[in-house]
Image 1: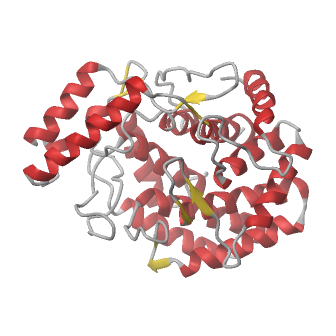
Image 2: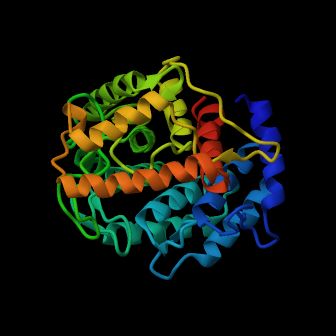
Length: 360
């Protein structure tokens, strides 16, 4: 997608903005602060300052007293979250840079206090109020926030925090370059470990890691990114993810990962073919893509028989059968209930804006 198309689609998306500033998902009708922040960042870069500031002002108003924002998902999940807080906080800093509104900076500083209070151990930030797993993409989001805070404030303590998060991510990277979803520790509410590969979350983790050190000054990160990019390229076949590499039911077939992969590949000057985003007339993308049958069959066989390195997750047979039930439910959504999603659309425009306007 080029700049002209991006601007055209964002102008259409503006019809979903409420007069209070937030954006409403046209299918689920839920209001997600993160999605509003991501869209408003893009609006700032295409010159729609009034609409963007209306959204950022709303975000500042709803920020909790402890500095957090809630992660609000279509399935009813609505809790304070290091994911939402770090992503929104970083975008608040961008809004401050673009508008010089000090309220946005104050909001980001409150966000910083919250994230520091949620660092359980060096570089390990809890995901949300009820989810205590050491999830790598969460740490990457926090690393990106603290780097941006350093850029704005020049306070080097933020680089120290960022480096802790970077180290706690790349220490778990698999030899083939994949970033697993989580560390090897079992943490509430997970009943079995999620130290597994996943194309969608690999792309997300890599994206925010790159934002945490755009010049690759951390030599450990530079080496890690090189391995992660090579792994990503191998996992893309004819422009689409090979989902047989994944082991998470809840991310199977999600479209959002392609936007993160696009940024990572283009930023590192890799021209690996990626499928075009399926954008409808309202500027929105579908939540899921249809998975190729070959990848799907291979994925299911791995769940049952645990063959090969990618399938060696040490799950019991009972857990494997339980996971197959989850995969069946996901496939039902993909093939029969697949609808557009503002949540993933906002992420797509965030990534495209980052590449087309910010990184240039």
